[in-house]
Image (cartoon, rainbow, N blue to C red; front, side, top):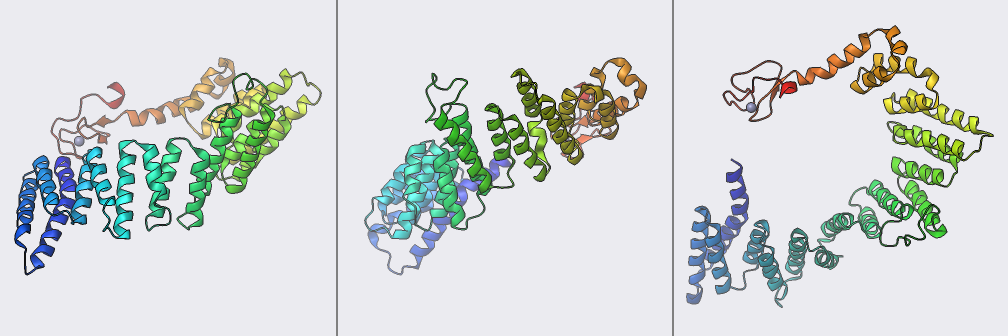
Length: 408
Ligand SMILES: [Zn+2]
């Protein structure tokens, strides 16, 4: 089935141009004698394609191109056929040949340039692809070229260039790229903060204390990211982390509190950072006011847990206030019978959870085991509660192993 449709995918463009070309040719009342050879080469190529002999078909079409070098459509079709088959050297040659022709219309020239850029990108020659896409700026292909450039720059982690292209796409009305641009800025800031990337400071400089300029630049990038995408979590997360690294613990907590106003209140992403901020302050020996920071952290975590009852947040709360751990965990388990919560409860000293009984733990185990108590078809993956001799999904006989998923 897949082989069949794949072949047709390859065949269709070739068929299309062959039929179209033939139709246009047959329209001509006076077929010149010297051109008689090319239709014959076409029929031959078409016949070979229909017989799934693609290699021979391509040879026949190449022969047709040589006999009739003016046919741009045939060149495009051949070039695309080569690219789809992974023969990039040949597709590049076809498209370069098109571009070298003086009689090519502007529209066809842009089209050939776009095809050539796609050849390079598919072949993994990113520098050449970049140059080829850049030429398309201002043509009918400029939006497509910019989208491709954005992917190329993200793939090669060239964040300033990626952001520049994304900004052009956004201002051209090609969609919203704000969230993506914020990520570009954050990636750049991340490289500065961790001494990575092309403009990283030398290892001797990038020890515990960052060079001042890189550090400031990272903060500016994060602020810019926040302004670019105010609903994005990452700039807020990273800005707080930047402050925590500099010992601005209280500021970091205040920054992270902004996460509560974002969709899904993603404070769980920094729950461990919050515990570390409190530990870092205590390790730094700033005992005066240390209780205040712990209270600030706990208040923030409690607010987050109310907004979105995440086990990660609860465990951060318990790390900062262990005295309430047993009660809050068993309550959490009763509400959300998850395996992780059950495991956390079982980790407590036995006398702390035995009072609640094993009920909630048992419930969590049963709920989590249910998806594993199914049979799964080895042929198509269809899962069912009961055993089938014939799979209802793919109709195979005896395709279910006699063991349930858990026992496989
Ligand atoms: Zn099946």
